[in-house]
Image (cartoon, rainbow, N blue to C red; front, side, top):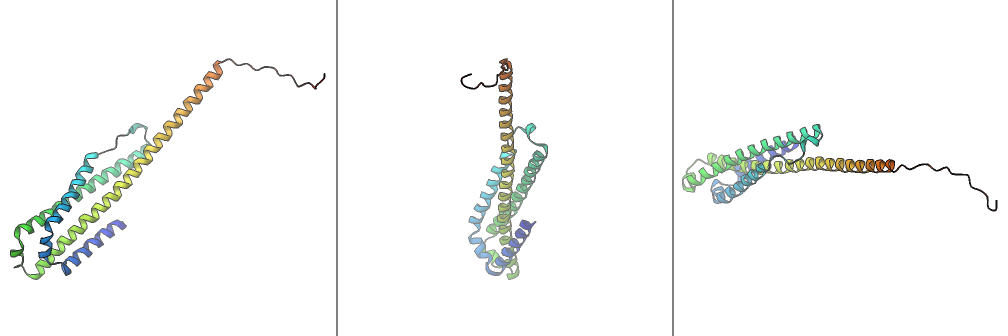
Length: 190
């Protein structure tokens, strides 16, 4: 919930700052680098989407933990879709603005130019904040995967040790060891 508030706050703050301090003509100057940055974000999301579910022996994982992991991965994948959509809107807007050109945009009323600058600034802040959120969530999912894998490894090691101990007991029993009667000790010289 707090991350959502930070995202909304940073989006509106960036939009306000862009409307107040960054003329749309300057946004057009850095439009191409902004498009490259957004394209890199989209490419990173597509690479992450390609990974999918981790390769685990799902039958041996605790069902509650497995459900939590798969739900988290599904939620994260949904967030990836929203990032791609938001980045696509920002890329489309920048492409249209660059296509219109600075000469035609300078003829727009001042309020419209400030609004467009605010929208671009807000979208850039939103895209960056969502990307940071997804990275944070991805780290969270990796921690959950680590817990599941470690639990499976500990359970496998315990099973192996139990099997070794049982095997040793079987071998000791199969040796037919007998108890030997022991006599009480005698004193020296007797």
